[in-house]
Image (cartoon, rainbow, N blue to C red; front, side, top):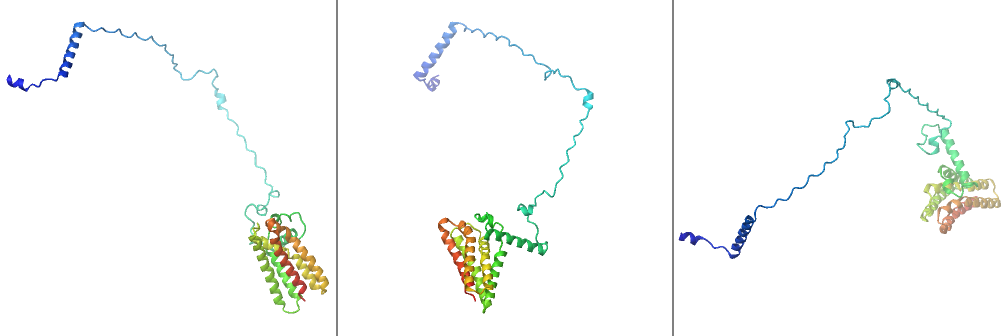
Length: 279
């Protein structure tokens, strides 16, 4: 017994007080009698039931279709035939510019020559002679070409060489080089000034403007009078300058108009001097 008491550890004062309090609560609850039971919650009133129909759809008053109407077939409607295509009123797509161009490799040579000559005549009328499209270079030389300018340069060189008494080949070479190189230099001058023009379109324009000088050179070759030569050259020089003025002036800024027109006038004056000087 002495050993068992020596092994027991005494409780702390606070723990002993908690145990005593719990025992007192148990004793009080036993002495007070059975616990009072609260009344149960009254049952909720019954809810109204919703009638459910056995059929999912509402009955319709429309009578069902009869078997006779179901056996009838709707007659097919025939589509109207397409209107006939009139080839005479259909536009030529290749000629109007929309679509592939017509094949010119297999056409006769005479058709090609006639087409090129017709284009040269039309461009000559638009550039050299008065017309309502002179104020708009885009419309006047929309279908530009280089055959016309080449022909006028060669014709002027040949006319000057025929007018010369000596060194005909050298005269032709000088005239051809002056006109060809002058046209290229004048076109580059317009482009460097900020001009809105196509390079080959400008070459074509300057070549067509040589047409009056070609006529003057031909007249001077037939007439050996220097007075007639001077008058003819002055008239044709003014004509060529008048033909080139609206196109070159509208291609550059108005403030730089003189810088673009002066070299053109200078080249035409040089050609006129060759026409008068060659004997």
